[in-house]
Length: 102
Image (cartoon, rainbow, N blue to C red):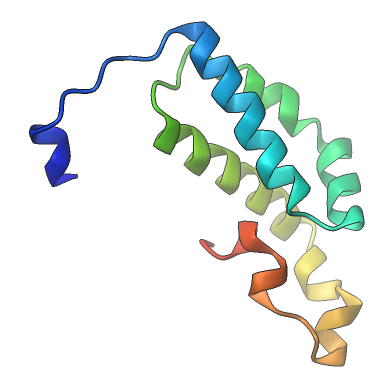
């Protein structure tokens, strides 16, 4: 962003990145309904995300990576298409915050 040229950001250390990864994963996970949580748990994506600690270096990047990983898993299994609420007309992207950026 244009502010990056003005504001100097220090790289986060590994411990800080792990804390942000855990907090952000938990925040996005809690926004899911129970069926989505089950799908995400079965995917094992949390371990994959936590394995990226050496590859990520800022909070914005961490949020994006987690959001995209969770969204990809949910969409790849067709969950949002087969959701019963979609057929009832009650489906809303706002119910699935992680899908808002797809």
